[in-house]
Length: 142
Image (tube, rainbow, N blue to C red):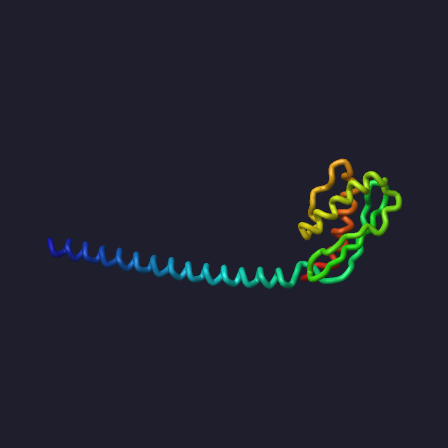
């Protein structure tokens, strides 16, 4: 009977060692897979930065502002927004439009049209934002 219990304990120890060994192997394999995927992600992010978010060119967009339609041109160079010009805003109140122009700097700096509107010129800045969004939809690299 004593040898039976010794064999059972030995069998349990062997099973425990095998289980632990397999767990360590699985963790190593997972760590290698994670490292490989992280390297691939870094390469893809670097390629995306080199490519740029937008195609080079000049793109037009139009949207409704406070007093009427606002037409803008978005200029893209080397895949990035380089300038945004207001082409037309004939019925727009000059004071609101001047205040809303501050949104353009934020768009260029952040390389996106998804920017908060300007307080005190909400409708005008929303019009500029929406017009730039429409212009950049044409410019997107896909």
